[in-house]
Image 1 (cartoon, one colour):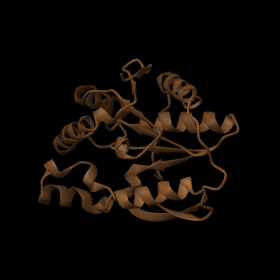
Image 2 (cartoon, rainbow, N blue to C red; image 1 turned 60 degrees about the vertical axis):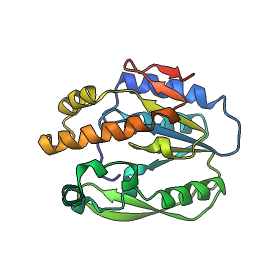
Image 3 (tube, rainbow, N blue to C red; image 1 turned 180 degrees about the vertical axis):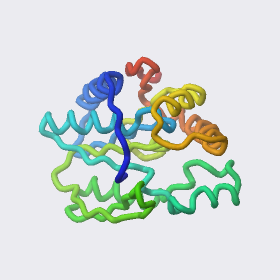
Image 4 (cartoon, rainbow, N blue to C red; image 1 turned 135 degrees about the vertical axis):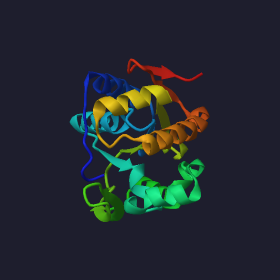
Length: 211
């Protein structure tokens, strides 16, 4: 998303390095990695670390930010949620048909693709012209990225309370009672997808395989 702020620390670098090692064990010409976690857990930061590391290894990756695929425009989302009930916050807020279409375009090595891109400074939905030609990796990151049909699914394992504390420290967005209610519902929705997880990023940013 345009205007997003990345605050990369040593924990993100530690997890990113281990994820790259895990990717080396996967076979295939096209590999999709999904990184899920609650708001403020470090999804975008870890995805960026992995993407940068893959580029340095000579295999650049395309990052797909799931938050760009909301069906409700940013400026209308709060009103829609209040009118329809916060219990409806979850994976169904995203356009999964379009996400799957772009994943399929990646696997087909498509050269011309138009992606949605939310500008956080204007709340506009822009369009990004890009290409998947010659790319081996796609990184899908977002709250519910575990739902994507990825080759490797990773969940950043932070609880609702830990996420609340991180939100306070990071100061990336306004914090109020409505926002806490949203975070609580997001927590429930993210945890409902937990059975799809292959690897956990633990609280100390180590990687743990799910048995």
